[in-house]
Length: 384
Length: 254
Ligand SMILES: Nc1ncnc2c1ncn2[C@@H]1O[C@H](COP(=O)(O)OP(=O)(O)O)[C@@H](O)[C@H]1O
Ligand SMILES: [Mg+2]
Image 1 (spheres, rainbow over the protein chains, first blue to last red):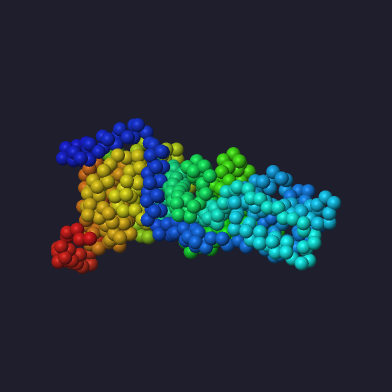
Image 2 (cartoon, helix red, strand yellow; image 1 turned 90 degrees about the horizontal axis):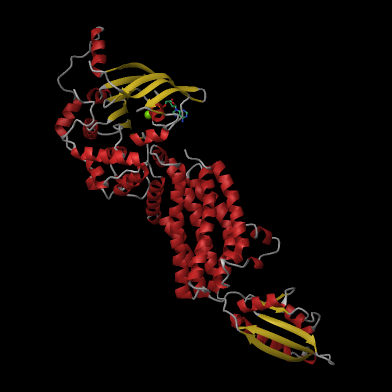
């Protein structure tokens, strides 16, 4: 009869009205943006319900921050800048060099030293020269309020030298002064490092796991049976991942600031700058995730491959220790890793109050890494 | 006899996986608003054929038109008017059924009320459940719900009843019949003959990538009978499955 006529069932009002609506949709065209946002929303929901994402992005870094926040202090080195033009071949400097905990920083201009001193990157400046018409030396020390505790250690070291029998005749006087600087706390070093590592792990592990599992469980295949574009799938996932990473970053920064006095030189503007850097970082790191999801044959292969990417950066990118503390032969490796530059830029922005343009070099290195990684990702990524 | 309009037309379809020919020279039409069955043993090439029509796999050669659109050039248009249930698809992890339907609504660009979609397949009570926590029959019903989101002209169901108990199978038959009566064309694969006989208007038998018979179940049976075939055993008025259904009831039970 009329069973071929789709509009011949008056008792199906609900469906018929649905069909009319849908016809209007078809005419008005398909929206890629809507599809992308639907995916971003779904992915975001999925991420915040996945325990591993929350642990890696929030719990892990927070634990480290807590531990180091309470541990405080830590560093046993005292960095002393030697004024340009200071006499190097004198008993005071020689004695200082013998004390194991003191590191002498030479070959910097007066201007550089002034900055380093203000930030507490060097703990004091010393200038030694022979007094006019005398065999004795005059020692001029400048401490900084940015590193008062280390300055005090140095003070007692110098006092000991002053009263040392052997040295006594050659030291005429010690002049001391203190400049005002910003205190560089352990948290100011640790927090950006932890933040960087949080971004690295969520970018790498999260992306690799999600795309591998979506591929293997044929979720992506089902998506392909809808009009959605591939780019929408990638961008939707990216939006969710970045959104989650930024919320995590904000949480870490605010908590660090409120409870451990993490320095944010320009307040909210500094936070925004840090979040911009975080976005760039997580995009670059997601590239590793895409590559890993393409080369891993199953889920159990994801952690070992991801660790190959994340562990060296965890250890060598200045997450816990300044890379200057590493042996010389290791430093070039550190300086090749993208996390090094993210950490560096974060610290400069947060503590030194630099803006994004000032850290353009670090940003450029990250962008170069990003281009390289995505060039590989496009080759090895698998949809099916 | 009324002339029927073909909504899917497959001509000389060939699919090779390297040297292996999975589908060889397949041709058939699916008429508007019918339930069309592709029947055949495992490995016959049913899934391959469906997924080529659904624009999910590339064909080696042949021509396929779906509602006037060519699979080669108009895949995007085809995807908007079809609903697809894959033989083994998963769903986005950690989301409940309502959220999954919302996701698909976004992917299709459809304005629907998620709860209404779940009601259509009698899963409204499971709205907050995760897909993984559903029984086999519920999973299949949910999959069918996702195929209906864009109000498709054609839906493809790949072995929707495999592995289900008799009640769940019958529920699904009712659901599929209802979807058809709402104006949708249904293409279904199965290897249960009783199911095809009950459900399908026409069936194609596929074997080693070729169609060996295509007609209504009635005609195919009549042809066989007229050729002098007789069943060995006297046919009883009921079979064991009827007994089972009679004893255990036919209600939705998951
Ligand atoms: N991706 C593939 N690569 C190689 N061979 C395949 C692939 N998919 C299916 N086949 C082969 O093609 C044949 C038909 O498979 P399929 O279409 O899944 O059959 P059916 O759905 O009827 O069980 C089988 O022999 C199968 O092994
Ligand atoms: Mg199959």
